[in-house]
Image 1 (cartoon, rainbow, N blue to C red):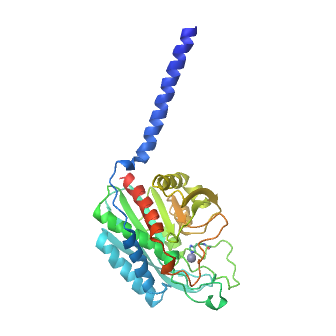
Image 2 (cartoon, rainbow, N blue to C red):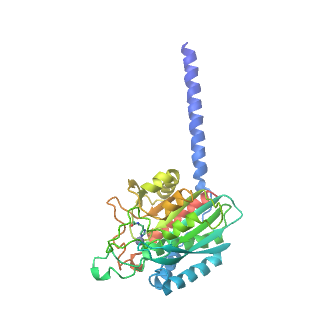
Image 3 (tube, rainbow, N blue to C red):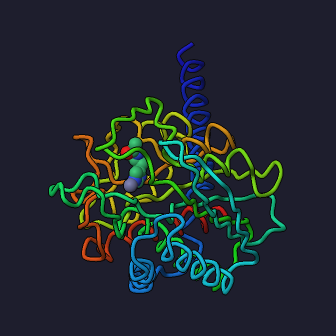
Length: 329
Ligand code: AHN
Ligand code: ZN
C-alpha cells in the first residue's frame, strides 16, 4: 500500500511538472522575444518627428497647419509603408457645427491576415481650456504630448518596419478630430462624452476595408512626458485584459517597470473605446493617467509644447511596441 501511494505521488509530481512545463512553453510562445532580432527604436528620430508636427503650429481641423501637417504625414508614411489611405469624413462637434476630418491609414504587409493595429490622434485641441490662465482658454494648443507624441512614436515604428519587415501585417491608423470635445468654458453637457474621438467613431463604423480585423490594437495617447505613469486604464482592462497584461509584462521585462504600473484606474474616453465597441477589435490605451485621475501636468494648456517631451519616454513606449510587434512575427 505504501509503495502504491509512493508511485501515485511520483506520477502526480511528473504530471504536474509536465503541465507546468507546457504552460511555461505556451507563455514563452507569447514571449519568445529573447530570440528575435528587434530593430532599435531611435528616440532622436522619434523626437524629431514630434517636433516636426509641432512646428506646423496647432493642428486644429480645417486650419492651414492641420492641412499641411496631414500632407506631411501622408508623404512621410508613403516612404515606408505599402499603402497609405486617406479617409475623409464630416463630423458634428459638440455644438452641432460640422467639421471636416481626415483619418490616415498606413499599412504594412497587406497580404497577411494576421494583423496588429496601432493608433494615435494627429489633431490638436482648439482650446487650452485647462490652462491656469483664463486668457488662454480659447487659444489652440500645440499638443506636443497630447497628439504629436503618439504619432511620432508610430512614425519611428514605420521606419523600423521598413528596415525589418514582419510576417504579420501592421496597420497604423492616425485618427483625426479626437480632441475637439466640448470645452470646459461651454455650458453644453454631453453626458456620454460622444463629442470626443470623432475620427475613431467614424472609422470604427466605416472601416477602410470591409470587415477589417486585427488580432489586437494599441492606442498611444500622451506618451512623451518625462517620468510618466502608465496605469492600467480600466476600459482597456475590460475589453482587452490579456493584451494589456502582456504589454505591461513586456515593459517590465525591458526594465520600464517604473513607468508601467499595475495599478488600475477609472476609464478614459479615448479612441480605443470606439475601436472596441464598433470595430470589435480588442484595443488597449497606453495613456498617461495617474492614480489621482489626472493626465500630465500641462494637459490642455498652452504649455503642452516640445519642452514637455522626453526622449526616454518615447523610447520606452517605442521599445515596448516593437517587442509586441516582432515577438508575434
Ligand atoms: C476626456 O477628457 C473626456 N477624454 C480624454 C481623451 C483625450 C483628450 N485624450 C487626449 N486628449
Ligand atoms: Zn486632449
